[in-house]
Image (cartoon, rainbow, N blue to C red; front, top):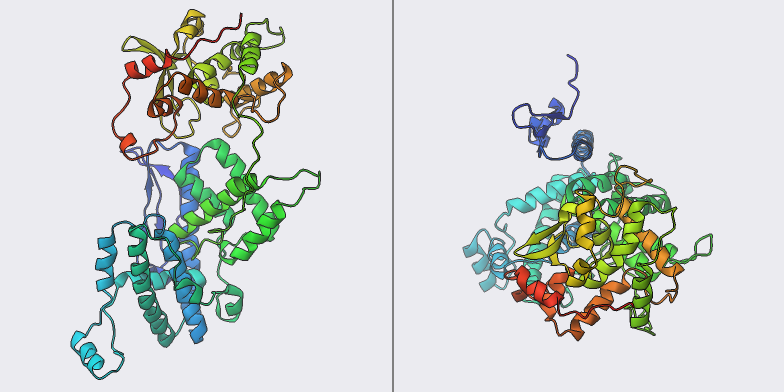
Length: 529
């Protein structure tokens, strides 16, 4: 009988993406299913659906291959140290999984009760005799499942005695885990007394007893992470380059074989001057390269692709910067830029670039928005709401750092200068770039971002050359200064600029457009005459 090819296809009734994989008969019992039949939302674009399908199929095939090899492997016996190390490996992964958000203390307290002796009378009798209770504890089915997943992930087939010993050690460590998470739930993030006592699980040290099995490809994990988490295209582009660099540094792509020491060596190498003499900053290495690795390996840990996150806790100590000036534009710098916007542009510039030079600095000055939030504006994003002219800063148009849309009132000075006439003449669609020309733009390097880069170069050309102030971001800092000068409330300032609320109380409710408009109109007008 011919094998049925696994395909990605649309459901004719719902439009959802779907697939079907028949689990081979020789591993069906161990797998626990006869078929895998996943679905993905109908609204998912074809490229994203294909990426998600490919990641899913790779995971299924990898598991089938592991189970098949495990079925023919000779069970082995681990030493006591290896048993403790392997259980500790599981424990470390569980701590990483829950520590940031431990949840309710009562849940962990209830979970710890499940670890009581199965025969409480026998345990009490042993206590009265001054002896240790050696009987079984109440079985936690979740730990049995975790042990199966752990052994499968590590490519191990162990004998019954070793399996029981690992499970017993996991029960003990689960009690420690519950107590630690109860501490974390109360806000106590002091040292874990258990972790330092556990020997480290080293995959190479058990090479003689591990199965060759398929590797868990780092590149595949990255694709699966992107398919599920859907980061911004620019982030995908940048992180792919960094993850590819990690693979090249390691000399292999097996995520299971990556250790914390490997990540530390990679970090150290990134901080060394490159061949062209350029040096990556500590901030870049920490917040970009290591952040990418932590996110991808962390996702793999959460989805049981690997047993621990080798990048967890690996950081670069960032030296404190010496600040010799404020990061916002001075009055003179602001006047130079805004006055230059009124000058005639070179004929070689496109109409969109001319509009960008004329209006983007003014919009940034009166809204405090990020430059790319303005360069991505469309005609339909400018609208009158409750009698107030506003701009709608939305992820639908491009990139918004918080992924939360917001409506920002237009200062009367912008309207007096004729901005609404420009919008009306443009109609719908982007104001500051031509979507039809493409100009080398892509999802990872969109045209509105190129417009922002063009403006940054132009600001340097007209005389704002101090490297301690950023040519576009200086407006965002200056808006905060001007808003304080106008005595605008802190939470209102943050709402206008799209900064996250600082307290739980500030997250409640919303800001009426009339309140925001009144605040914006308190800003002093820029006089460039």
